[in-house]
Length: 221
Image (cartoon, rainbow, N blue to C red; front, side):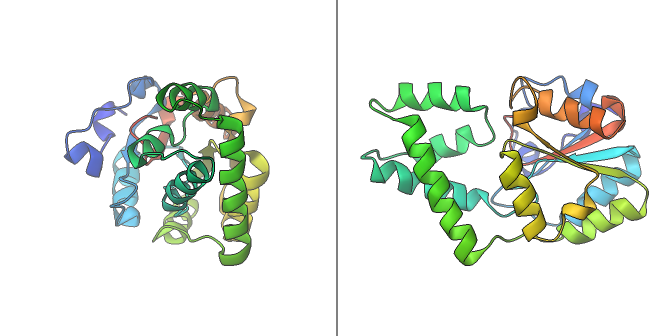
């Protein structure tokens, strides 16, 4: 299993592989472009057949759940409510990042940026949206997970989302039972872009990192 398996739209457009993870020690990566996501079943099954991983570990937001567009919308809205015009490129930059990194970046980029207050407003906007309109899965997710389980391949989620919300979202969407483990950044010392959450997921499913395949939508991870 080698870094050559890092594929997808971002790779096709010349994006670099993740700089803070030794990809070869974690197995192959399937990179998915958040906003041009397509045919995950065909692509995942093709690489599973080729690499034969013992487990596949998924990012959640933007990979399994169509939530990154909401993240973009509500960060922008929350910041505006606090008098900050936040740029989309900065919101995309901080997706999945450890909160300490996001805080430092945003507070240095936007003078007067009250990270805790704005993040809490964003979470409340998201909570209301989820309660009133729900969430959507990315196309093909259930078919893909069913394919993996049918082939005896263990599955896990590795997400920056807090455990309570991650479990609630997966339960709401009817796919929680298709995962062997749900692993969150809160369970490890350091969040993304460091590999701790993925390495812990490997431990939880009882597989060596080199035996596992990761599916991500962010080039920062």
